[in-house]
Length: 101
Image 1 (tube, rainbow, N blue to C red):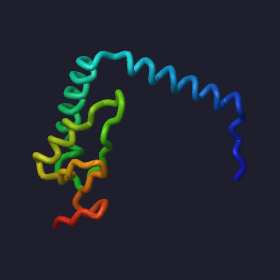
Image 2 (cartoon, rainbow, N blue to C red):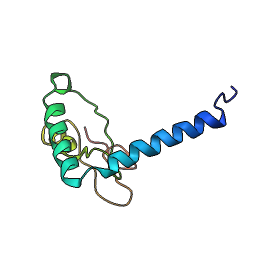
Image 3 (cartoon, helix red, strand yellow):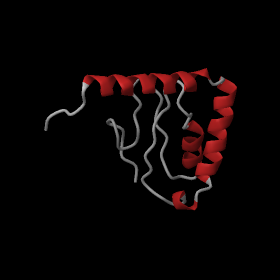
């Protein structure tokens, strides 16, 4: 399939992305921490999330919302298994980690 993206729309997309990142990066660490905790509370209270498996997640980078409070809550409820911290995280059943179940 041919690429229908022309140079000007790709440049516009790059500019929008850069502006969005700059706004997010300008938020204070304290504000982002409080927002991440608030998001975690709301997510963990979702009835649709109770007793669901598997649950996918991401590890935050740079100034993204910190998903670790959500992950910690899911681990505490036994819905996901913690990954071992290393340069290349090893998770049960993933990246060579032993499958659990």
